[in-house]
Length: 396
Image 1 (cartoon, one colour):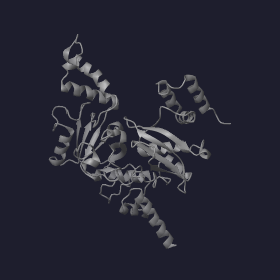
Image 2: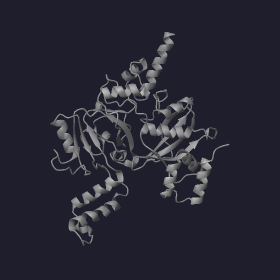
Image 3: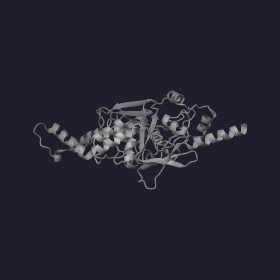
Image 4: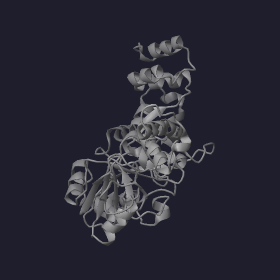
């Protein structure tokens, strides 16, 4: 009996390590010393100083974030000091060298002893007057090296590390406004009149419109960064974020297979199913794939995604074995991906009739909004209305 219990505990530790937890943390979880229900984890997080009310995001195309390091190539594309996060996933997505291949990770942050500066909608490289540095990087270096701070927060900031689709024509519109304000009534727009500062202001305004406001934080130590589903073990001080569910091809739910897990992951587990991330051979490098697998590891369905510039996930190539269709499994899987990643899933522009009906059943008001906004202009309105009615018709 004792031997079988030991084997069960060893298997539990092995599964937790595979899910991304350090071995010593996994052992404390398996022994029961670290209860993993949400209330217990969040209580430990708050005791350690983590802000459990705000989810921040970090984007990278340099590989999976299993462990936070201060090595610039892993962290961001510009070699800036510390580890940077944003409460705006669209902004975080630009931290990657190529945002089209980026993955955005939800994280919780322990700010410790910190400074905070309001940028008033301005650009990271053009701080308001009176700030202790010429840029966010400069301010961070001074805070960490000279003022012994643990973090620096920059509120209402435009901090975009790469260009955005659609920013050029929008910036031109703002450049016209900037020059009209400078030259007064009767001014006839001529881009040759613009200085580099005028262009900088116009692009900042365009990027803020495209992404919305951002509040960014830089921390100096890896132990200040954790996954929202971390154990928050008070004895562990390393850089492992402890269980990034979408990292490294690991199944999306070693912890998610318990009753304490997020609701949709737990619903799948109750069916004997789990999510496993993979790569589609047909997918471009910017695409992510998840499979729904049964208890024997057999694939019964899945979908592919790409990350949109605003940080959402756009779904395409959805598939589910015929015997499982109409059971609600795919909708639960999408809910689980949203819970795990902290990002919304949007339908692709081109859907089959079955795909259209799936999305209408999933979120009818959103689909009607997208249709009225021109998302599905390739469909005749009568055909859309017919699919809408059919999707929502009660089954006999």
